[in-house]
Image (tube, rainbow, N blue to C red; front, side, top):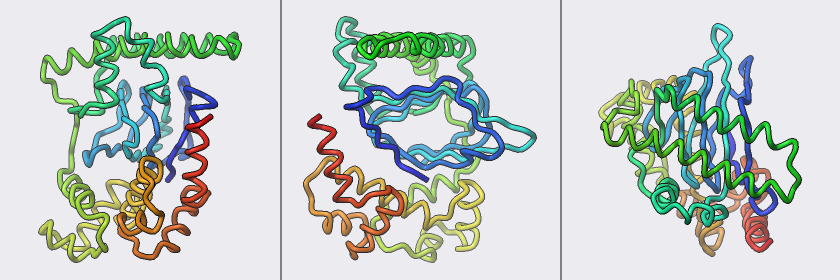
Length: 294
């Protein structure tokens, strides 16, 4: 499990075209980004959790993750399955001026990172998949030939083309009212909703099970089987994720942040944060502040 915090002051956009994972590598990730992530899945099978909703991972799936949006992927590699995806992560405000010439596209661009999206994932992209693939491939072909000075402009053109294609797919689905999420296990969604409301409180499995009208064994077994991690692991990752948000958007003392995420012992919080992030909360905040100034 990890949280990705790209240094956009050094590299304004992180990009990959048809990146492959095989043989159980990249089996499970649980992360968020400081910027936007757009993920196009070419091959793959598994499950994804976003906004407390479980989605089936399928080829042709397009996902748009907003800044700080926590998402969990559990991949299956049975029968020689491969996870192949194209992706881009970037800080949206750095490229917004390039969209201002096209009011409708600019409004869509802002909505996709600031608005309350009715769904983060789209299925059955069909012909749109070929267009999106071509947009990613075009940048991948251009990158080796570009100088550092030319890259920013090419990134901007890539994002304009990408969002035009996404807008077309989005408009078709919202106008038709097509369902986008394929959910098989509503009980897991109830568990995730309960966690979201209670993760900052001391966790007791019996309290959760009683609230959900399920047995403690059934709750823990169902969650582990569906997501690949235990409830306590998920809660701890959710707490650290919230603390990253507080560290980078507020000036609250680290001791108060620890309390707000449900960890009264700030020393334990610092130890936990370093285990997961590689640096202490104080170091993380200083690094983030430096990136903003540079």
